[in-house]
Length: 174
View 1 (cartoon, rainbow, N blue to C red):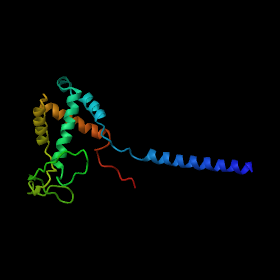
View 2: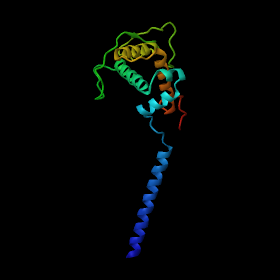
View 3: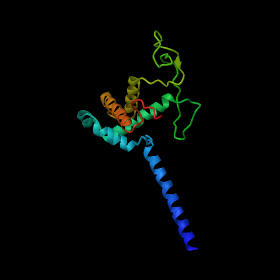
View 4: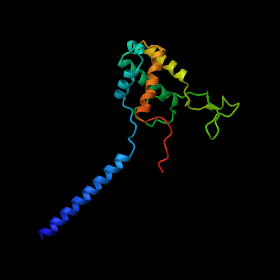
């Protein structure tokens, strides 16, 4: 009788070890999801800013620029009828921004630099984004220069590449 109990215990332990080992191997081979952590991004970006920018702005300014840019991106690209996230602010439709006409390969069709109007303003010009952040900074009473904003947004791109959110084309796995 005790032999069957011991044999049952051994079978259960072996099954458990096989399942845990299989899941560990599967998770080790899976790509980690890219998660934007604001505190980590602020540290990462602030540590990599040029010395002259570091002398002018603080970590709080870096965080404020990141949040202001995220708010403005959400505002500029939101469909006013689509409130997917409970933390979404009241979106504003940006109508009439021209977008280039592209073919299936993603290339701009010759002679069509200014194509149909983008109904939701989802194409955001870098200069316009910087100007909008400068206006928000003025409204908030923050003293940041356009070079500071450019440096922080460039640092954000470096951070996104570092966490794997953006980058080169992934190789085919199969």
